[in-house]
Image (cartoon, rainbow, N blue to C red; front, side, top):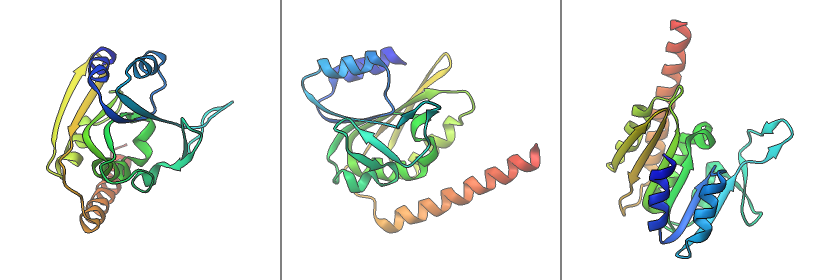
Length: 179
C-alpha cells in the first residue's frame, strides 16, 4: 500500500490533510512535493501509548476536535485527505460527513485488514452517491473515495448519523448474542 500511496502523493497539488500518518517515508515524500500545503494531524503520545481523546494536535501546534473537522476547515478547502483507519475508527461516523464536506478531491483511507469490515466502510460512503474503489494487498487495504462538488445538508447528515448509530447498536447486540 505504501508504494501505491507514494504514487498518488507525487501527483498531489493544493491543500492536503493527513490524519494519523506517522511513517517517516510518507512525511519525507510530502516535504519533497512543493505543490502541496500539508496539514498533519496526530494524536497525543504519552508514555503509555496513544491517548484516546477527541482533541488532536496539528503540525502548527493547534489542537482541534476530530469530531468537528468541518468547523476547523471551511467548505471544500482541502484538495485531498489521507488518513489511517486506526486513527479515525472511533469517530468514523462523524468523519464521513465532515470529510465529504471539506474535501473537493479524493479521500484515501488505508489500514490493516485484521478485523475490519471493508464493505461496511464502502457502503457508508455509497449512501452519499460517491465513487468508491478499493484495493487489497497482503494484509492491507486502500479505499479511494472521489468526492462530488455538492454540499451535504444538515438534515441528511443527521439522518445518516441516526441510521449508522442504529446499525452499530444492532451489530453490537448481534455480536453479544453470537458469542
